[in-house]
Amino acid sequence: MSTHAPRLVRQTVTDRLVESNRAYAAGFADLGRDARPVLQVAVGACMDARIDLHAALGLELGDCHTVRNAGGVVTDDTIRSLTISQRVLGTRSVVLIHHTGCGLQTLTEDFRHELELEVGQRPAWAVEAFRDVDQDVRQSMQRVRTSPFLPHTDDVRGFVFDVTTGLLREIDRA
Ligand SMILES: [Zn+2]
Image (cartoon, rainbow, N blue to C red):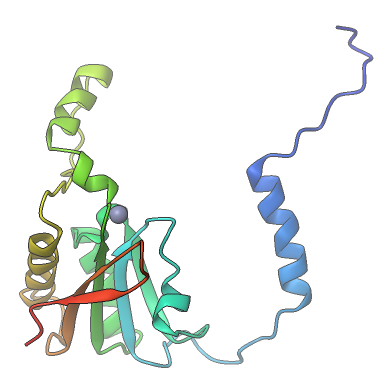
């Protein structure tokens, strides 16, 4: 191939996102608010691509904090975000959302061992794999309710989002 041949500029997915952002910014209206969520709620959820939290919960821009990770599990980093959310930015309620068909249900803690075998180093983090999604929601709620760092643990509720119907199913409503 000649070095003088015109280079094919292949658009990456990120290029596409940046391009979309220009259109977004063109129609963007400044909320004119500070960083405190309007509804004083933080939502912890799985990063799953099939869950549009704002649409699923009727949320508008500025309404809530969203803390997402693989599984929507409550890790130390989730607690870090919730602590800042409550103590600095005024949220009072916590909603936790796991879902059907989660990728974490296909893993076990062996994943860490396999990683160690492959790269020679065991990750410091737990995989937080689970089989029973309801039970993992219970555990996540318990981690929030018992955190010494969170001043507001009266309104903590947990749900399983069904990716085939879009409906939430509440776990152990008090
Ligand atoms: Zn998931």
